[in-house]
Image 1 (cartoon, one colour):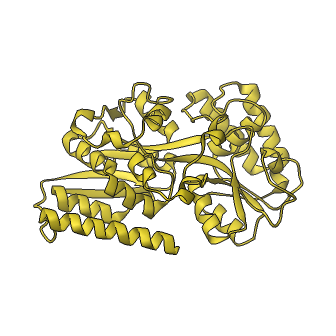
Image 2: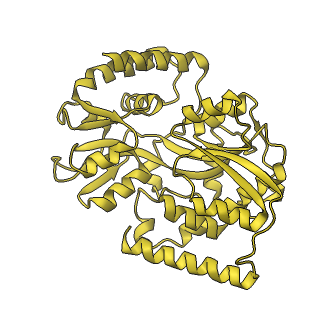
Image 3: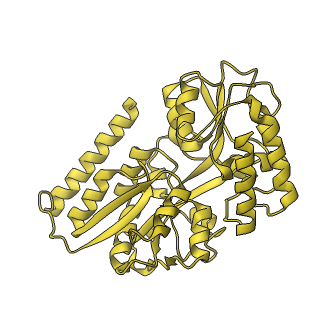
Length: 355
């Protein structure tokens, strides 16, 4: 952890401590009045905040984790556990809304919802047209993390992944949606296309590229580029920030052809029997002090404008933390494609990986 982050964490802890002292709440835990069962990505919420919420409200949190939206949905749909709240990706939110798996958020019970900027609610309209179901949690872009000492010049296009110049030194995402998205954008198509010919053209380019790919990875992309085991890798902006912290020779770019603006959200499932408790938790996440602590824990782009206002000038200018408008003008938000397209992508992905 850098000195800057340590100082900010100390400041947050002191602020929270003073708040507790003023309210006379430190050391006094409320009796348990109920529970909420939540499923989220791994390491996507500061665990101390879960304890803090229980201490403040008396609502106990049962917490489950998943590595991907698909794993989350498999756990959710199995019915083994009745989850009250889920946090997942934009396109999976669209699927859950369409399938009737979510309840509308009781926004009138959330006094801190205004801390989330309207820009981020607008992003959600791509899959939640009337902003009824989804609360933005983290957001960002997908781009290329690369070692400036090992490339011939600044990178600005997805072309470096496909032109053979860095054969054997490229890491792609081990993700159907993300890998097809990159290729579709490079070819000039929408990442949400349902055109079979365009999707098949993307697969053919990926097959041609495959001999140049060192590996298809997810979380390990950052570590491999930081360690110098690869020249470049496709990565999420938040992971790119951590990579740049570890290796100052690294840079991150959203290619000019455009990419994916991703946004992960919390939502209340149809199984939740106490939406008042669920709304309390969502409102808790919107609080400036809570969002700041969680930002410091995750270091992905936050939609909480109060937290953004408190960032240093250096942090505000970092495209991995606060993506500028110029970098997202050609980007799109992923929405869930229909089953026919999803099945086609799954089939073509299996073909690609088996070759």
